[in-house]
Each structure stands twice: as C-alpha cells, then as structure tokens.
Image 1 (cartoon, rainbow, N blue to C red):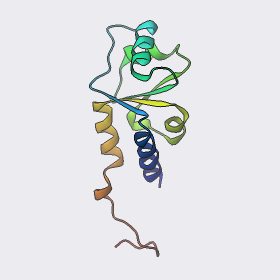
Image 2: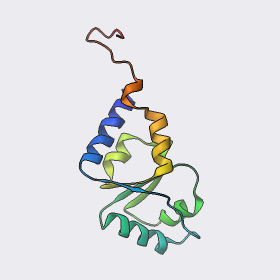
Image 3: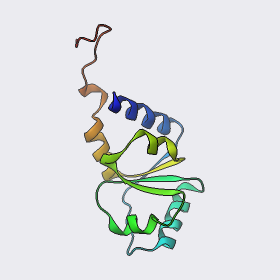
Image 4: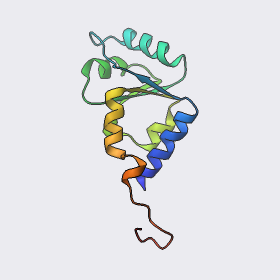
Length: 118
C-alpha cells in the first residue's frame, strides 16, 4: 500500500513537471552558497527536496542552512516529504535506488476484488 502511494505521488509530481533529473549532484566542499546557487539554477524559486542515492556529506552539509531545501536519502523517501516540497531534485543514481525499492508496475501481481492474487 505504501509503495503504491509513493508511486502515485511520484507520478503526480512527474505529470506536473515537478521532478528535476540531473546526471549527478556533487559539490567540491560544504558551501551553503554553492548549494543555494545549484538549487536556484535547477528549481528557480520554491522549495526543493533533494534525493540522494547515498551519503554525500558535502551536499548534505551545504543544504542544512537553506530553509526551503531538504536532503533525503532516496531509500527513506516518504509521502510527507514528497508532497511537502514544490520540486524534487533527483540524480540518476537516486532514481535507480527508488526504482529498485518501488519496482515497476509489471513486477507486482494485481489482486482481484476479493483480495486474492490472480
């Protein structure tokens, strides 16, 4: 049920063009000003949820002081954070993590109205 809700919310964000895909997201050092410039270039105002494929200390430290930016490891994605931000910044590696966690629609067995698997 949780996975279906996450898939649905991600689909809604994608249809509204609220997901920004990037090849990679990295900074040379922990600089808030550098992260602010990156987010403004990608999002153009509004709030942003930055999903990371794993630990990225420079990006995490750089975004701590930005009120409208939150970093989150992709495997900890939840509905509250997903719907609480205007845009989602998603590196391709984080997309792989989410796809592995949620799977694709073809990998799930649908249940009929009685709750039994078909």
